[in-house]
Image 1 (cartoon, helix red, strand yellow):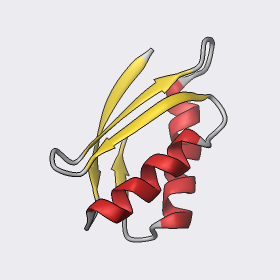
Image 2: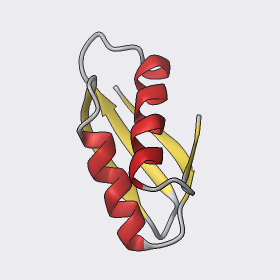
Image 3: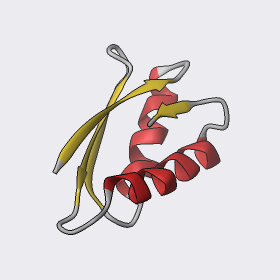
Image 4: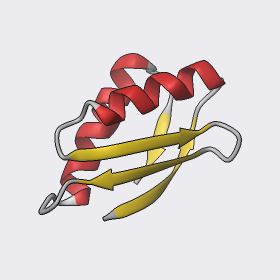
Length: 72
């Protein structure tokens, strides 16, 4: 399952850090962050609850870029 989330990030480099952090999160099959559209597309692994996984994605993104935001 894929879902799209609105994000708030300051630069393309920060967006890349967020993408990498999201991809490393357990339950995420793939993630793409587009700085130009300020969107994150997350593909979840089979059987995962998107709401639960996205809480972890948000925490991991905050670790690498503390002033970013992922709107759930």
